[in-house]
Image 1 (cartoon, helix red, strand yellow):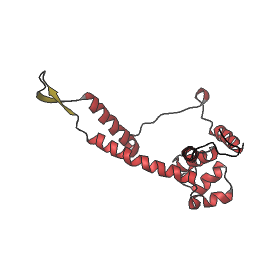
Image 2 (cartoon, helix red, strand yellow):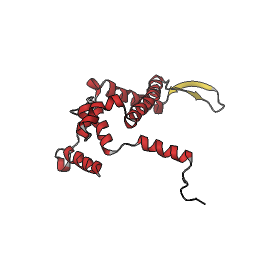
Image 3 (tube, rainbow, N blue to C red):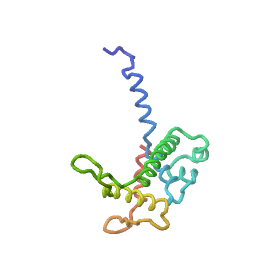
Image 4 (cartoon, rainbow, N blue to C red):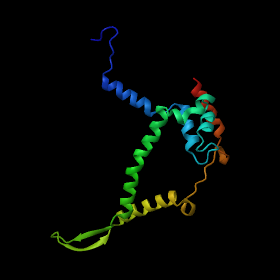
Length: 167
């Protein structure tokens, strides 16, 4: 039974809720991340301009990287943590041997052959790396269009997000 004024959440639940809250961005924070990290953005790698464009105050925009709020550092830290193991997996995949042992009915090794499934994984990994790191030579382009083949209306989306952020 819960007494009046007693907190019903355990410490573990409170920590979990705080962690979840920290890891999810509100619409303005998401806009900032998109503007700041997107090489196609007019404000790419410019924290002040990205902050202003996302709808933050001028004063906040001036100090955002210096103050490094939790919501900003969580995204940077998480991305760095995920990148190291991902790169290790890519390296091991690119270097993996695709030869497998061929055995007879008794289980004795009678030779080797290339495993087409492993070859496909290796080729896909190589293509992934080439298209991103060697994109000046190997990039794949996909054209995206808006309604009826017209341009995508980014201003409409930005406006809707900004309106939602004000609520």
